[in-house]
Image (cartoon, rainbow, N blue to C red; front, side):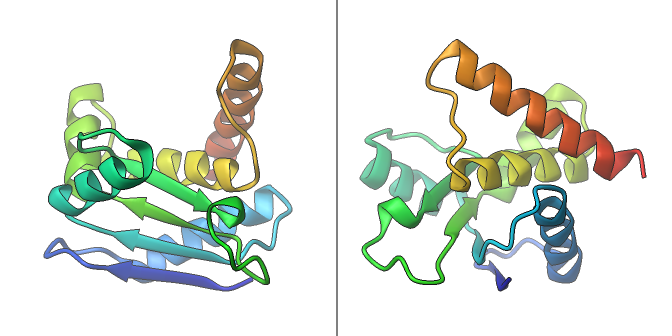
Length: 140
């Protein structure tokens, strides 16, 4: 399992803590996914969102799995995060920023493991698994 975390923003990110959280999530999912995580600015995530999803908005997270790239060997996927957006959401929802970040990492990793929420049944299954992992992380 290779985990690469990069911060392309001026925000301070605890890369070691982020990697440890990702390892914990992957262990709970019994996965050895190779993963790249990148923190970008609101402007950058908006550009990426427009290019790949056709949505001209700032978002908190984007996940790109092996189906999105021509190179499939040893590549699990990439998660792109916008910490400024995550902070806004955490404030709005009255969640600690760390918990919001973990929730989004779980969500993004589940997408890379081919979970989705295109219909109600998929959404229930994905949310149940995400909540289960989240609770194991924060109750231990």
